[in-house]
Amino acid sequence: MRLIILCATTILAFGAIIPLKAQNFKPSNTQFMVRGYGHSGYEYMETEGEKESTFVGSVFNPLFIFTHNDKLLFEAELEFAFEGGELEIGFEYGNVSYVLNDYATIRMGKFLLPFGSFVEKLHPAWINKLSNTPLGFGHDGIAPASGIGGELRGTFPINGIKVGYSLYTTNGPTLKDGSIEPEEAGMLIFNNFEDNNNGKAIGGRFSIFPFTNSSLELAGSFYSGKVGAREDPLYEDVSASLYALDLNYVKLLSGIKGIVDIKGQYNYSKVDNATYFELEEGATEPEAYTFENNSNAFYTQLSYRPTMASSEFIRNLEFVGRYSTLNTPEEAE
Image (cartoon, rainbow, N blue to C red; front, side, top):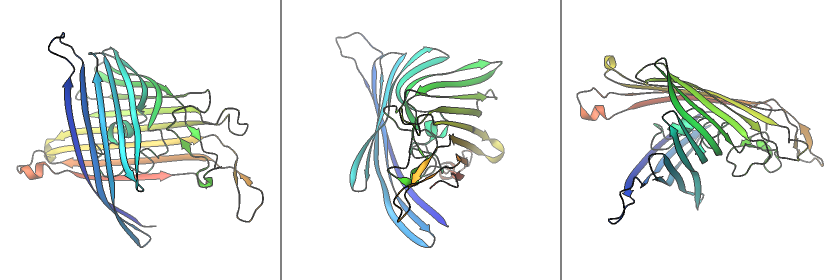
């Protein structure tokens, strides 16, 4: 199979800050901020000799941020996308954060999960250096993108080394049994507004910045929980365990007169073995089957921006390359 994807994307970002105070009231730290971005593009694909081209995108994402004081913050993001001839409205996240002290912040609601670094820090179109996501990453990947629950996060120093942490619990993912879409049996649905069982997912990410300038970050993540529906004798005891390793390195190197940005992440997903059913063509009864439900995905990305070049035009250029892989269970549909 040969696949070539070319996509040009236009991104527009905006922002405004509106202090919520009136002339006859006491000065207040309360502020309301509206930010956001939109993007659209053109895509050309060639698969096994067949060529396709189309305009894609038409997406608008407003972000709303409200600060009540120095410790209390509300944030939310909506997504308006025109796909398949219809307008789709998505609720990306919405949560409240409270700063306990210099080393700890708690938040509750729907938030981007810090499972690795790509989804939480890099996936928005105005941040992502390429026009698509790595294989297995993003909203439809093998790892969680967002969740509804609570989190404790922060940073603290140890012998001059900065350490970051995040611990959270959310509504767990749901296992697809293949009854609706047989080819997706064994896959997980992470975007759950309500949990399908009483066991919540537990996750976390721990990172270290070994250099005083914080140019390098090394991190590990975990995420686990029950995925089967309650009172379902076939799947109620099925659980999933996911792990990730990620690296971020950004440094101005005078020897090459520019900024080097290296990023990478490895995701591993293991779902307990379960029995699924497939109705073969011409058969009267479904046939049971099972498989080792393990998946993994990996990407590495390198970019270079010649910020010390004499030409202003050259200084504003950036060269980016990415390699990614996705491996799914061989015996799965």
